[in-house]
Length: 418
Image (tube, rainbow, N blue to C red; front, side, top):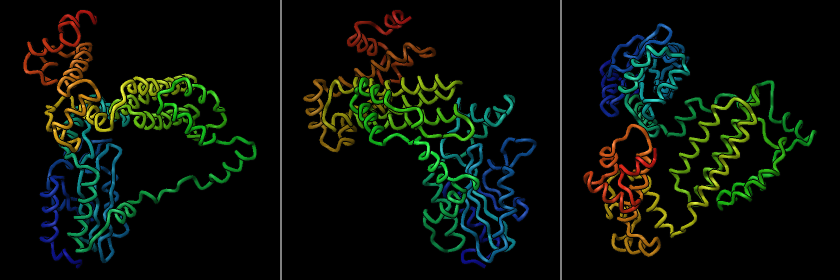
């Protein structure tokens, strides 16, 4: 037997160790994928898909069909993710010992609108969505890095041997799929484009366009964009020109996001803009609309950078302002900001006031009032709820601070916003 596995009790002990360490379901199954040991109920409580419940069918097939099952030593752990975003680790045991299946687990929560859209993608009837939401809510959330570590630990416990993350990922088969169909080749496409002089755009031209976003120069952006020839764009989908245009728009917005962050735009603003523009483009149904939306998105990034560049400060001040923006719904004592900036609280306070003209505490209040103004204009938020969310001590203090920066009480502002 392999070092680390002496008998059934040894396998059970390993399963319990993994379960206790990660609190993720662990199954020891035989060659027919029938459970011999089940720790954690989530895997067996999976809602049915096409009449089947329990472990996903494809996971059971992997356990049954893996050719290494009869080998003298365990195979390397296999990482598998289902279309429903469930993650599994499958480790075939030697001989007739079956396999250890760890999972399901999620890399991130699946809730609300995300879950609804995912289930629609899989044609799950509305009547079954509640059971899926409950199922997702019961699954453990484990980061990708920690998930890899779980696979490495399982392998070491079973074999007594070390395994690197690189070896694990290579064994997972992520590089096994062909990069292109056998009847096609990038070389052929390259020859065809050169023959007809349908060349891709000069990378320096692309760099220049995104440099204008970094500089907040919308006019320069528009000039450069107008110089791009239609045939210089790559083909990013084999089957659909509309899909190709959408893919091009997504990649352009991704580059614009990085350019805007480099230009000083708060990264949370940049990423949120990216999400909204991409979501909007995905809903479009014709190519001209995608072209217009992509250009509008690029211009939006340039405008946002220009707006943020009106007051340029040192890197320390900018980092603090960005941190305040991202953590506005939390308590923000000066000591916490000083620790983040890597300097004393008194020095940070003096530096921030010198560069911005505003004390840190006043700046936080201003930003919370700005956020309150946005929330007041959204349905579903009461004034007391907003005051609590943004850490104002009480309703009267919220009203006092809000009026200080807007000249109106929150209630008056709400009436004027209608």
